Image: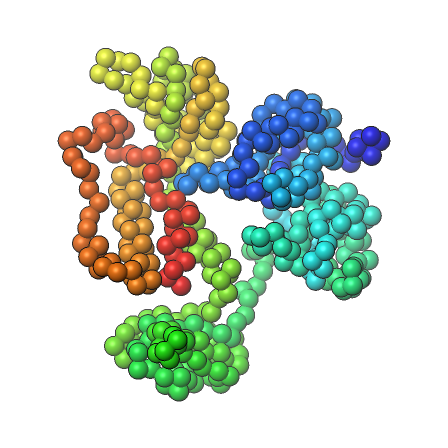
Length: 439
């Protein structure tokens, strides 16, 4: 038991009570986390972060304790604990965004042997100072990617570890240890391999090489073919230099060659392509200042909600939706002056127990924005079906999504001034499913 309570220095208030748990299995629930961390001591509450469009777990959570020593005990006991077959990462919550993101005391470690796990890596680095977080990057199946990150409490400890361990051997492999570079500081990675699609069926490897050779020396040019030797309509061209590859992309992307307009871009591995698509989708998410609240007690009034949500920012409008007889429908619409305020309120109050009920809080979309997203999703689905040669798919193009009876449309939409629930919009998984077939 002495090792159990051999604790690192407890951070000063207000960090005493809150822990961050990351790298969670996507199916882990708040109840599971509550039961697990309650082993260390009484838990005040657990908040599992979820995607505000799809409702999918973001694979991290916040656990709040009544007393700091229970939180410290939980940190020691459950950091690297295996939950649903995956080691979780537990650390004190750092509420200062600058300290979270500036990379101070953070190291990047690569060339790790597959047998090295988070716990072993932390043990090696903890000799040089207090480790706040230690994480090995993994594939979806849990296998190590061969690199990881170690975050020290102080920059001095990180520098000591870097000078001592860079070039050292761990489990038969020579480690490379370097200072972590934030995404904004990183240089754009160079590439030489170019992807081209929408090629005419009679286009050959030599034709492809002839077109691209105008922009620099080529090491290879190949058109992908099916089992019968016929062109699949796309190929790859590899240049000797990054600059030549960039010039070719700038000149030939969207160029009409033959009977088609080409797409030319950087050739990406599957994991890189999926990450790019997720980032692109994230950038397209609208900034929303409006919230829907559901599952309210019928006794809750506009004043109650304004007082509660007003703690997170400037509430400009509150409306409880009611039946014709004046009884609340248990749903409400709330407007903030800023999107950040709305997201903060949703993060804290979604699932909050109030007046005998657990509230459900989600973002709201303008009907026009919802229709735009829905049309985009349907177009992607259609293209995906065409890509996979689904029979009779052309007959689906003219079908429109309509309500069976427009007269039976929910009166809630009218009451809310042209807004719809954001959780009815295309989910992140649906976007990923559709776009994965198109690249």
